[in-house]
Length: 587
Image (tube, rainbow, N blue to C red):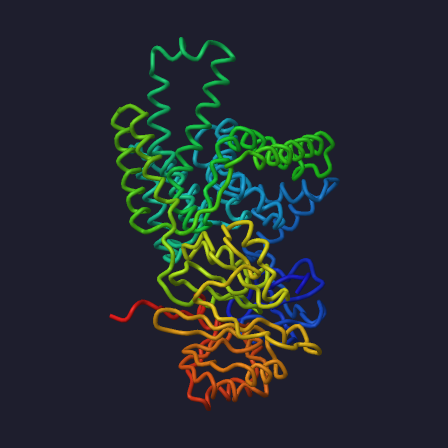
């Protein structure tokens, strides 16, 4: 669906409403008339009038109050601003998602974390409140709780709120408090409330980065403040203050980057050294944007606040473009071996311990850099076949003696490049596109951009690939019937990949090909109706049949033909990992 909203329901499926910009308030009782999707998770109504609110929420219903506040804030932040500037302010204040292109560019430069509501925003608000009212809980905690609720109570801000509450409580009862203890307390509370948070990106990145700041940056910076020779090295007056400020920012950014590197590589398959210059160029703009947003929330359209917001947003765009142009500011990393990740974590812990004990900085820093090098070596999947989940498309990875071979790339939205990196694949020896349709070739540009591709379809085929079709005369056949059909031979198994070939092309293939036997058959055209499928099943005699499609696309007659042939059927929509068959040597 190109436009519209998804309405979350407390229990049951989501409701997709086209042509609407805002859904009903939380706590509303609704009536919706639409079509239940094949997965059973989404009801699609025909138009916005297809969803009717039969009873609005109560006046003091807390989630509804929060949502009203969020909608009012969105309207105030949009008054008189460019759409790009308004989107930036909404991301900073409310945690709204940035447009996909802008989000990707910020992720490449290591500046995306500045625009996700996190502990930084809560810390700035707490600092402003402390300056106004002093560190008293009666003035400090309620505004922080209200802001956390309006911004969505995400894991990073929940962590920061719990840590602030622990500090305030310790001071109120005159008890000692340590930053690492606060981190452990916040993690324990969050996991007790939401155990599944342990594997979410927000939890892993927030806690690892903050632990790095507390365990590495804070001890080093504390020693620098007590160094009697530092004024002679850094200069005096304003120059010293600016230099100290830059050094502090760089140490905090480097510590957070080092501590969160394993999570970043495993979750996003990317390392971003550009986060260091981003902390100097982008970081100072964030407080100015937050202050201007605060004024715009209080006085919508206030001219000075608009000027500051627009100026900072333009400066931000220029800074991000500059960082993005730096070679090596961001590079992709496939999944490393677990031993490399564990070794890096151990070295990082030992380095932090050494720094907290007062050791020199050079040795631990070199050790951490050396331990990070193995993270650049991909682990790679075991030999075999992987039919990757590609939505409405198809993408088949074969790992054998010739390396990694990818047959089709799925549509662009399937993000096959990310899936390959998650499998530990950063190089393809051969890339084959069966035919130039979006659902089979849409992700090609992204894969060529992010992975090393040694050869493409027009290069000589490796020994493991046998091209079966098209051969001979194909005049009068459509694009699907001209799809490349090939047989992939591993050490123990064979797979027959049939692209989108349809009835006419398949009958011609059956007449011309002499050998079609295979252990696995990738069903033609995502399991669509094919009158020659039964003949193909008899000729190929597979043990397994795979179908790459969305739920509900595969034709019932085709599925029945597979069942009648006694072939085991597997589908990409049934498992988030897709379909797999390992192909190691016979023991």
